[in-house]
Image (cartoon, rainbow, N blue to C red; front, side, top):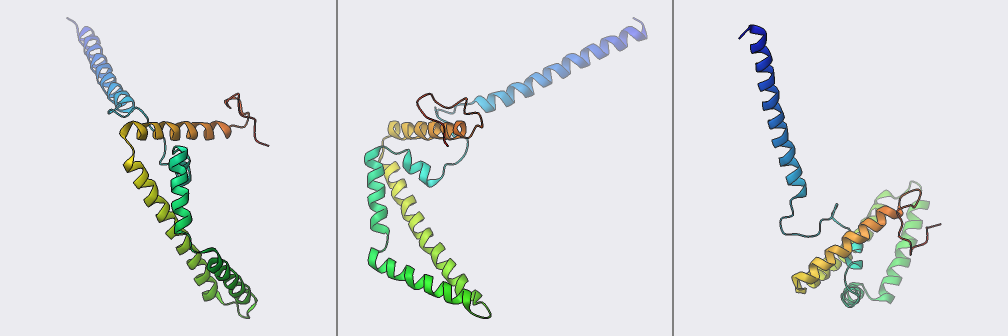
Length: 170
């Protein structure tokens, strides 16, 4: 065998080995992407709390909303506190120099109130999901996946992928 024949044969073997390695890597990556692990529904992102509550069946949604209403402070006291907060905010803005610390305190208080309500909602949602049988939780995931797909299709400029029973947004 000549030197040229050996080179050609060596290149052929190297190409075959390279092709095999590439196929193994591509197969591994494709398998990892398509792997089911026993879960029939996959979400692209972790959903927000509102989307999760909306995906619950109506009776469970009503139960979550009732629990959130109970978690909210009483209406009269909250209204009085909002009015006082608005007055303190306006006074702090008008002050010369502006009272930055009062404004920061007002915003921090609002954030704390929102966080308490969010934590109550998460707690009730998790209690509700935990009480569900696995089949119902899987149906919940499917509704979340469908609502996410619907939201993505609604954001398309042409609206071509919008379901036929939904009118385009104005």
